[in-house]
Amino acid sequence: MVLTTRAAALVLLGVLPVVVWPDAGLALPWVALVVVLVVVDAALAAPPRAMVLTREGADQVRLGESATTSVVLENTAGRTARGLLRDGWPPSAGASPSRQPLTVPPGERRRLTTTLTPTRRGDRHADRVTVRLLGPLRLAGRQRSVEVPGRLRVLHPFPARKHLPSRLAVLRELDGRAAVRTRGQGTEFDSLRDYVDGDDVRSIDWRATARRRTLVVRTWQPEQHRRIVIVVDTGRTSAGRVGDAPRLDAAMDAALLLTALAGHAHDRVLVLAGDRRVHARVTGSDRAALLHDVISTLAPVDAHLVEADWGVLAAEVARSTHRSLVVLLTPLEPAAVEEGLLPVLPALVAHHRVVVASVSDPAVDAMRLDRDGSRAVWGAAAAERTSIRRAATAEALGRLGVDVLDAPPDELPVRLADHYLALKRQGLL
Image 1: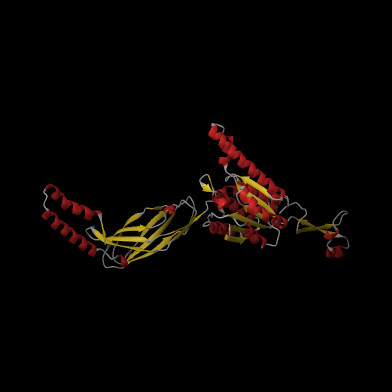
Image 2: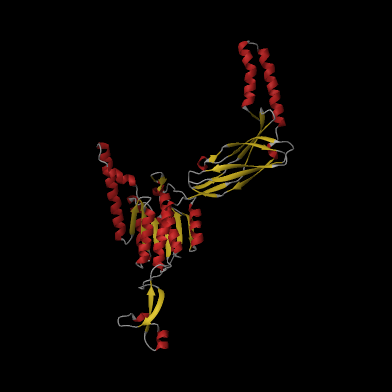
């Protein structure tokens, strides 16, 4: 049984005369009367167990947008149910309103809708739904909390998608739909032509030569449909915040733009996210389903306060025996790179083309330029030292044959996409 503010106000109404005329004989009968009214009112309330609850609504939404979820109540009791309903969600789900009045006549249904505006990426699970049904006097009632399962998957907002149309135009030129395809050394057959001095004898097509009775060679073009492996580091260094978001979210934004671009190029894409173990794995080449699967799978992945085990992640990459473009989205933190990533890079570079893409912090560059006051000078010195160490780490990676991209969150997706297109243009994939 639950009491309302009306019951408390009714008790105070009987106590006030006692303050003016101190006489306990006036208060006790009044309190007893209120108790009787409360008990009767609670007994007349519809039983909460007679309410059948089900849930309807959206199961996913992009971060920054709103979705709705509804609780459908069916009254199987013989009296009208009046009261309040609270649909419990975690604070990060942004549920509104928190409480809603309800009136459900016998044998009828009502739908109460809650608007969800999440503030964080990932899965948000509904807590219990609480139904409080009051008596006709609204002095007291009965309450019950029921588990009505519900989940809302909050997807990455993917702000870099605005750059996709311009990069697709470049990709169409490379594919020959908007420009002439160029021939060159590669692995995909292009055409036949007569042999000329200086041609590689290994390119001679002996069957065509026998038919034409003159030497004929095959020409090749750079392979267009390659394999792309994107590894997203979810270790402790990715948990650091740049601006209002963790580095991991910016790395995911870059991964999504590259996935969308490679999917349109019909490249086979493998996306991995992990630290000491792999938390997400998505593969495919169907551009219609690939991007959706990657966005949905990466949505609940968060950074963990553990050191990334690059041996485990490199072993996952090594499962692909074909030469691939391997993109490692990891912060360019000197200690973490030197101890974890550097030892496994030689084996990766020997079989794949490797790119390390890192999210830099614009605040560090701002500190380097600030010389206003002694505190700012010390901060500038620390920022300069950090920049020098990052540059030295990038140089060490470059000596191993790794392409290094280090850019702020809003620039990294574009830099990575342009680098991918440049490699395609040069036939280096």
